[in-house]
Image 1 (tube, helix red, strand yellow):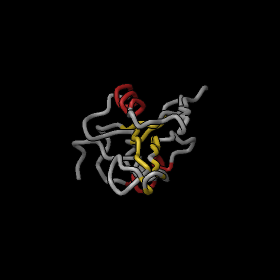
Image 2: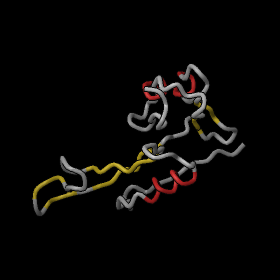
Image 3: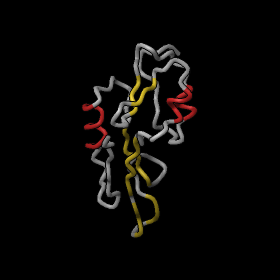
Image 4: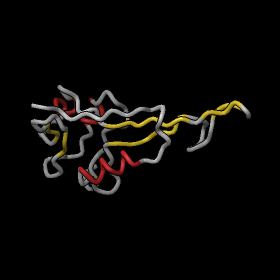
Length: 121
């Protein structure tokens, strides 16, 4: 079975967030949940450059669920709410999620997994 992948040339990324929006729309993600984010790599504040004039730099880093071949988040989920489709996409069943955050702790990509809005705290 073919597996989905997303290749991003970070040298060309200018932080438009289109990849994050497309992912959110394609997966029907609720408010407050995103499988894809674009982080600003620069100064101490969002969208500020690092360095001193005239040698300033501002870069963006697309950051998303890697849909691992053997997802640690899926193995850690006590209810089976985290599932993997045949095509490799990792998804969350909001009806089964109890909000324990085991998946978040198990994910090797810090900040990628989030709780579904409305899940118990």
